[in-house]
Length: 333
Image (cartoon, rainbow, N blue to C red; front, side, top):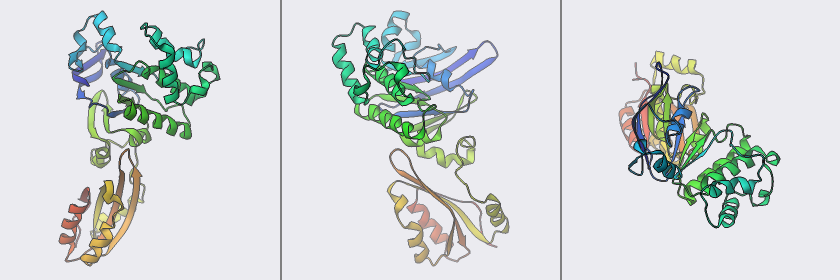
């Protein structure tokens, strides 16, 4: 759908904001872009439809090289990419209905009323169609902005920090709406956020941006396994146990310590219990956590295994029955 090749962006000569960015979105996926403030997230978002023209590199939309298009041609292409900015950009002088209709009016569309009423129903705002923006809650403003973005039936929806100013309950409702828009309307969605909960809740893949460089791009659950690269250091504390205790056990080498990751249906299976009985292994759970990502549960364990002659057989079969397993220490005296 959207493809970037070696995109660079400079603000003035010495401020290299985006550095050799290359990736492509997959049709009808939700891609999350995360990074600290100043990482280049918003700048990257603006390059997708050339609101911010890159200093070098190529950007394609449906195999069309949009960085080479003239203004008139680019205007037509931009209709396929809708943006919801962080401050919504809604017009206070217009009602909800009129704000949504504006996108259609500018293109001289027909059947404006029918299209607007249809999208109002889909985003759950039919009862607020005649309200002015000043009368709306934060969640209703976000719904209005999303409705205005999708009423033109775009191929791609760009969301800039869609939940940053919302309370947890409203956040859940907006994320449900984003999932609905993506699935039911078939719109490829790109979400810029600094909230890991948004990534876990709705994203199929995640792009981690740091200092203008892509440090990670892959399926969401893979991001949590990449903890050794310290990608998540600024966003997500996976191990919330007594680290001093873990370090003491690592130093003493009186047992084996394993980090085990479960993904999908196996998360709820009694794998550890079954294998411990089979190989007469004594295990002690030092840490355990199960979270729910978009499509599957995800679980992490830190397991202490007492020294046992059957340990190698236990470990080999364990690795076959879990998503990921690593030894934190070689174990044994």
